[in-house]
Image: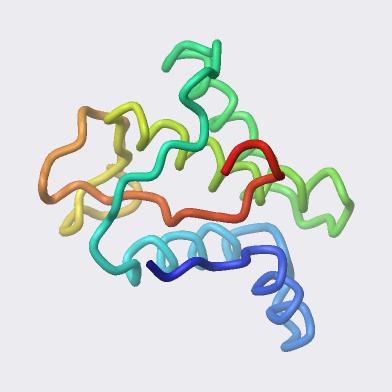
Amino acid sequence: MRQYNVARISSNTRKAGIVFGGWYSAAFLVILVLSQPAWTHTEHFPEAQETNEQLIALYDAAADLCVRSPSRDVEVAVACQSIAIYGMALNERGMCRGKKDEANAFHKWHECQTDSMRFPEVEVPAGFQ
């Protein structure tokens, strides 16, 4: 299974002169999700205590900071990285955000279906693998 190192990819986009944060990051995340090969299920968070609603709220807060901030502060970089982790955790619970032929503005969280978009697996700290 292909794994992406979002931190490395983000570093490369900065070197290319693309601002990390703002709509560039949101567009990059959408492209990354769409370019994923068929999703395979690996559980990284089987003992997590957060509810789906709590994870969605955390995702929304991180996405808001990542997408709307033109800053290159560490806090923004962490928010952008955490979007993928929250998405991956929700995918493990059978929740997906958006469908393949749907505009990004209309993506909503729903129970995963065959045409649902899924987040790529990202590197997580030891103990979550």
